[in-house]
Image (cartoon, rainbow, N blue to C red):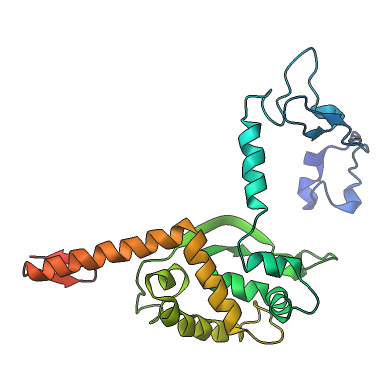
Length: 243
């Protein structure tokens, strides 16, 4: 790095990344990934290899990580359930796969168990080239939805709330939600939404995703408790039982 002092330029309102400051750093080349860990077989840079007889710690902590379990887990994740496997192959003549890829953001949002919120940056503030990306800044919050709809926000089931319904009852409500999303410029779509894809994805999640079973079980337990409360002469208001 050269001798330019960053603090000397703060009065000018310029950061060290400003071109006029001419604050440059020396070029650093990391080299190739041509070193292997003897424990987990990870490819490493020369700077990541141990020195003075120390253990490999950048990848598996010197073999302390259970790499056999990780390999087995990775292998199991390659066996995607249907219809995801069908859509991943993306055969040109497969119309369902084509629709899935063209509208993946819509399908993904519709099948989500919750939502992610953040301060999204305007793409015009960060010029660049390449594929579209989602730019965020500040705190990111993950939100799981309630078990039942809140009439203050929406009157029908969304996200994980669909899994307390039977698939046949859930499908028309999912399609209604998707039609509304199609009018949102944040969810580009092409060629229309296929109900058969929505139905297959919904049924796949019911059989594969542990959260789907959790919501379904919680709903059943709540309904049983509500029936018992009514038999005991207790009033149920907004999910709470009163004397």
